[in-house]
Length: 121
Image (cartoon, rainbow, N blue to C red; front, side, top):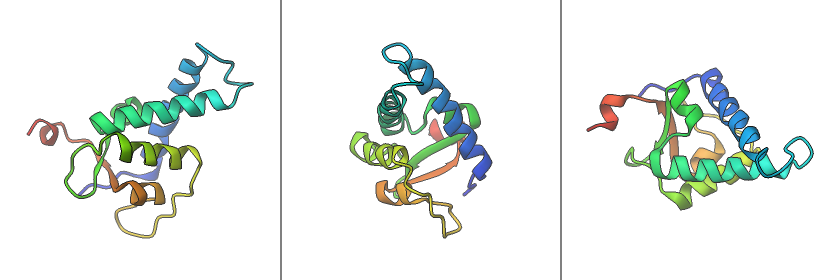
């Protein structure tokens, strides 16, 4: 299984963060109200990862976040756990070859390169 680099993963997160800043600007002042972009991040990650297995930033950078067990999207509850832990900046202590952080272990997810051929099967 192709495990993506930390650089690619971080770039996807930054792309998503910029989108969250822009969206939160529609209803709050994200540079003053620090909670707004974090709330948007949690909602977006819960929705996109839970139902589709990738956020817009992940799609842009060719990544997917699926269930460790069966390779399918994890659903809303598990995606919510992952999103909250990510938003709380739970350190991604990586100690295995799959580069799974604590938020991935807690939610049973795995980040890998996106392969459109697999997703259509």
